Amino acid sequence: MTDDPTTYKHKDQEGVADRPLERKAVIRIRDVRKSFGDNHVLNGFDMDLYEGENLVVMGKSGSGKSVMIKCLVGLMLPDSGYIEVMGKEIATLDRHTLDELRSDIGFLFQGSALYDSMTVRENLEFPLRRHKEKLGTPSDTTALVMEALENVGLGRTIDLMPAELSGGMKRRIALARTLILKPKIILYDEPTSGLDPITAKEIIELMRNIQIKYNTSSLIITHDVDCARVIADRMVLLVDGINYAEGSYTELSQSTDPKVEAFFKK
Ligand SMILES: Nc1ncnc2c1ncn2[C@@H]1O[C@H](COP(=O)(O)OP(=O)(O)OP(=O)(O)O)[C@@H](O)[C@H]1O
Ligand SMILES: [Mg+2]
Image 1 (cartoon, rainbow, N blue to C red):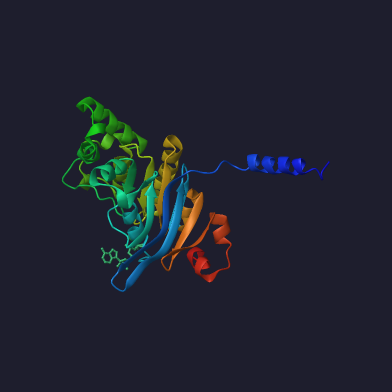
Image 2 (image 1 turned 30 degrees about the vertical axis):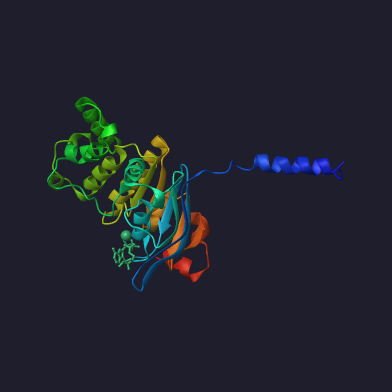
C-alpha cells in the first residue's frame, strides 16, 4: 500500500501535525539599517522574538545593540527597514498609539536609571502615572507597587531613597518598575553589567522567574556569556550590523566560525 499516493499524502499530513505549532512572533525586524554619518551601525539586521521565549542578543561594545533596541521602541528612527511589535508597524504609529504600545513593553535601560530624588515608591508610581489608565485608586497603586517590589524580593524598601540602595538592589527596583505595567514584552539592555557575579546570578534568576510567572517574551542584550548560557532559549549574534549567527547557546558555543568563537572565549 505504500505506493498509494493517498498514503503518502496521509504521512505528509502526519508530519505537519507532529511539528510544533508555528510560533507567533511578537517582534519582527526586517532589513533594518541605521547609520550615523559614515558610521554604518545596522546594515540589514533581521530578528524575530517569539512569544514566551528568552532571546539573547550578543554583540561587542559599539556594535549597535542599544541602537537596535531604541529603534524597536520608537526612540530612534531607522534609516530603512521594517519593525513590527505585536502586529503593529512602529513607523506608522501616531504618538498616542505608540505610547499605548509602549505600556505593553517593559524596557530595562542600560544602568538602572532610577530617579535619585524620588523614593522607591515614587519611582515605581512613575510609569503608572504615565499610563494613567492603569493607575486606578491610591490603594490600587500601593498594591501594585508592593506586588512589583515583592516580585523582586524588596518589599521593605518602599520608602527608601535610591542612594540608600546597593547597585544590585537598584537594578532590582528598576526591574520592579518595569514589571509594574505587566508588560507582555520585556527588553533588557545589559541587565547584569556592573554587578558582581553573585548579584548578576540573582538578577538572572529573577528574570527567569518573571518569564515563567507572567509568560513574558524577553529580549535580553548582554555581553555576559554566563547570563546567555543560563537564560537563552535562543541567541542572535550581532556582528558587522547584521544578525551574523543564530541558534541555541550549545549550537553557537560549538561553532568553529572565528567571529562566533570570539564570543565564547574567556
Ligand atoms: N545618537 C547617536 N548619535 C551618533 N552615534 C550614535 C548614537 N547612538 C549610538 N551611536 C553610535 O552607534 C554605535 C552603536 O552604539 P550602541 O550604543 O548601539 O552600541 P552597543 O552595542 O549598545 O554597545 P555597548 O555594548 O557598549 O552598550 C556606536 O558607534 C555609537 O557611537
Ligand atoms: Mg548598549
